[in-house]
Length: 206
Image (cartoon, rainbow, N blue to C red; front, side, top):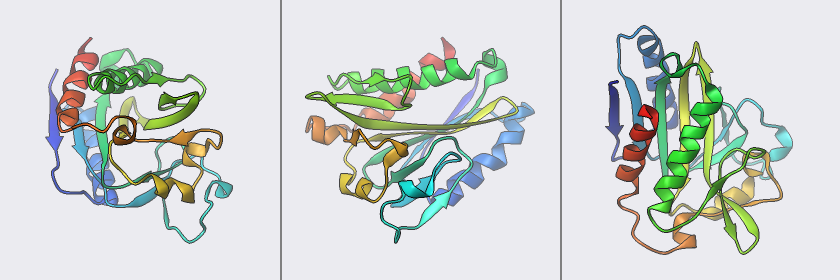
């Protein structure tokens, strides 16, 4: 199983990232290109998935980019690690739920490497941290599946600006907050990207 791993060091424009992925989906489907795991950062941007509602935009002055991924509104910016992928589910039993579980497991295991316990929630997609009985999101997941090719991705908040989430109802969930790893434990997270890729590759092969 050949999965190309791509790591971008400079921020990638959102539209360029999406266009790049969409240009490769057909080739992955036809087995003329390898599957892909791509880690990167975006400059500040708000994106809305297919199920977002207008009332989830609290600050009407912000610009929203509408996308074809699942999910609602989220914020991307420096200090947040994005992991995009193009994965062929035909090779993995055509099981979307299992694929989401692989993503959840990958994120939880990666964060656990830094001695932080997080969890998935069947009702609210994403990865969550219990901050003294206040549940806060630390990673967001948004996936689209076309012809059994899964793409788009997930993001982990490492050291991003949390006040940016005040402009929206993040992922449409109003009764839970958002946090990042530096706020939970102020430590070095330089290894997180490599650990994430390593765990994702292991879990995809299992």
